[in-house]
Length: 313
Image 1 (tube, rainbow, N blue to C red):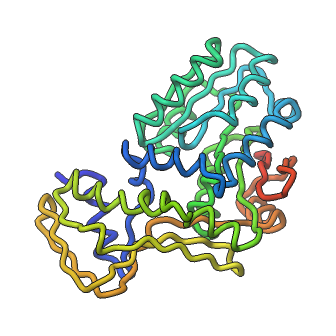
Image 2 (spheres, rainbow, N blue to C red; image 1 turned 45 degrees about the vertical axis):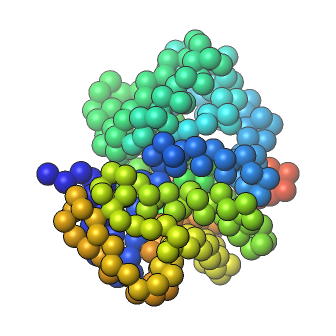
């Protein structure tokens, strides 16, 4: 029986154009490189969102708080920003619970450890697996007010239509009065966006190429990373930045555990990630179409990033 990773690799490399799913960038090596990226001066998103939460957590808490609320975060990692919101909510109600949900056990353990050290009174219940499956399972239990947090522009890993479908699915699961807090990377100078995803030190390149190395490690792949090149492309009209791995020559690559070889033409691209940037007006339209109402948006001083509160009417 094939693993989900092997199934995703077969499907992605058999597609035209080829793709590799970004979900699998986050193995141990990928997480280490992702932390390096977040600490780079070129990578503005993490520091912008941190400043938003530092400056506005009490205001956010006033708008979000409901007695006994359950907070569920899609994705896990460094909780440096959400810490300020959790602290403000705990000051209102010690009964609140926090549940980061991720497919990476390492990221979940990292988040839980940091929060236990900084907020020992907070009940943290990680969820390992698919976000929607876990959310639907919890909806079947005792009804509690829910706040869904999708920080770090994770909704931007989907194109507009896919993001719309995901938000509509989320709205179907949630109940009237539940709330949503999303981090949104805003449109800005293309040069700033490109430098965040294609840095001179090559950390983004190593992060992207690590996906091939993961295939080698876990599936017996024969990828030679030196024959592939990281490439980031930004389209200002759509606001989509895409990361690719470009095959620098014609080649056949065997993946032993799949018992298959995959052909790559010279300069053929493999898409690994998408990062959708929005204007505030565009995201307001998207969220309204998905069935949410806009409550409030908070911005960093440079207007590079926003965190927006949505309500389920």
